[in-house]
Image 1 (cartoon, rainbow, N blue to C red):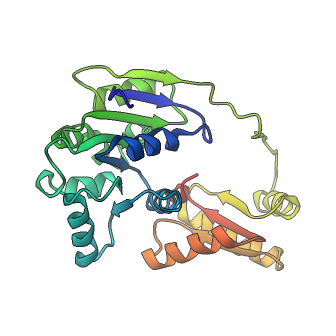
Image 2 (image 1 turned 90 degrees about the vertical axis):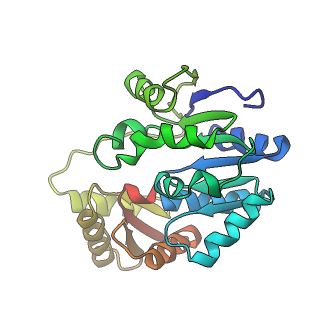
Length: 264
């Protein structure tokens, strides 16, 4: 990245992908724009960068006009090292409102597998991302993901690097500290109760739908009254999502039932 080469980076979670763009942003000057799929992920990464002493800001949905104007003003004067945003917010901010003259050094597409998995159905904005980024004229572009087989890598190449193929850096995605297990069951709610009851806390339970997340939280509250069980999904108001995020980060004995809107 310091050599400003375009890359697709497939490294397992926890291997330091964030450091790969945070460190160049600190020592290389200019602006790094980081595109993330989920607001919860955006909030988490923004807080981590600020704790590390980086001048990071965000352009995201739900901001007031005053908040956005403050961020844009800081971008224009070159005070921001890292800008976090979503594909939708990046499209809304025109090229004229972001720094020009080559000051956008690096654009990072985090969780880039979303291009393949969501682009054709759930969020078609991902299929437009290559054109949106090219209009920004960054000096280099990197796509990061922890999970991408050959088909997904090829789709990322097609959307983000249609003119010149990017280098691909991969590592074994398996993590020895994670166990994968299938539990045969006649009652999902009973099995979930037993698993949650004997697991170290806090616990994160993923469901495929919003109703599944709400139902799991409700059943766990009823069957394990000593635990605080809550739910999280994209249907909640922004203030409610932020309240749940803050609670889960600080809780010691909690259970959060969530859809993929919470991120990993």
